[in-house]
Image (cartoon, rainbow, N blue to C red):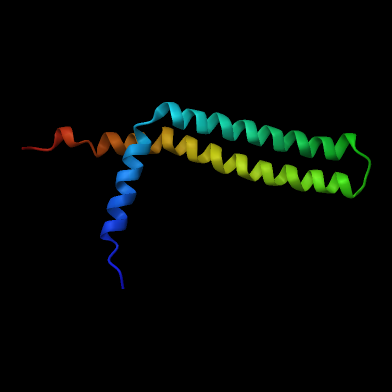
Length: 98
């Protein structure tokens, strides 16, 4: 059984580094929103503009995949902007006594 300590330390370091990149996190949020909207557009096109066919169903499936991916990317960006920033503030090394 391998100890979890190095993995936890590596994850903690990665999350701190991710919290210090607000511009990249905001770009993740906006990219996720854009992917979500493309998926929504594909689903709307398949539902309302295309006749019922296999092509329309495949376009709707592609739209669902884009929709799910956009939600995941936007959620990562949002959590990185908010929760990780709060954790970074609470975990600051400045307030430790020397």
